[in-house]
Image 1 (spheres, one colour):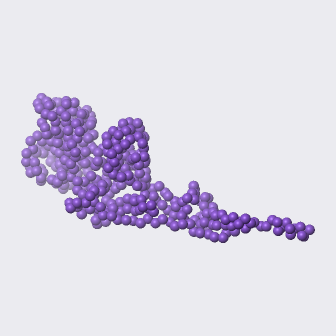
Image 2: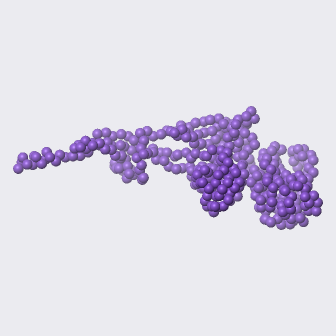
Image 3: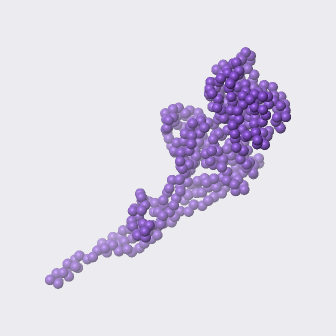
Length: 402
């Protein structure tokens, strides 16, 4: 009997897996922090809301052709619109014209094309490395080698990695945790659509594939730029010092011979006058905004929409449409009169001089709005009102509102 037991033990050895090596490893946990959002908008560059979206806000392109891909505008034609992008953890707020942001790169939707002006934004990966351990084992009977990954469960107990890391993917196991270096590069660019070009420092990283991710821009003195930067070529006229932020804007209301009509004559946009506008804004006599000439404006609504989009954020229209004879109030934004800076906004109107209000329309005609002087229709045509009034010694065909 003892010989039989010994034979059985020799025939059925105690097979087990023996650990013959362990290695420290890292699990790359990629957490989506900033994502790329796309805005399709009628508002032209520089977008009046750019500053509110932060430094990553970028003008991507124009001349959109096609339809909107999603949301309440889905399927609607958006020909001629602009394309913007921004990096954000959540959906940004709508722009001032009611256009909303959609998640994804501008060229990922497939329902429209556009003329590209700037490259796509790259969303940086927020990578954290979790320490794990690779355990290698060998079967004592067959010699087969296997491996598995373990991790502490928070209570000091070693458990399979999948018990702790939800959706564990072996492809994300690394021998070494990647390190991202921060780089600096001297560049030049405009800020929030400024006319001036500034010398700036671009702060960015590159991942292990060399892909660049923007962190932010700084001025030459290390101050972070919060406005939207568009890089341009440096010139001899590039400024070293970034101007301080403009004072906060406040609403001002002015009654005028309406910018959209005239007392007794009403809406002027349906009279085949071929009306076009151009906006210039001056601060202490220096131009700070100069718009392109508008297309021919065919209605009050299109005229005021264009003005909202092309006045550098200085115009805030709250007029009731249609125009009300004798009670049209033009509402615009400037620094408050208590601020030392003097602002002047000029809307130059050109027409084909057809008959309007009983006589040939004056062309060009200029509407001037300022944060100085007496409001509600009182004349601001006073040489003492503006420190720089000698710039316009001849103000024939001007209408002043303050």
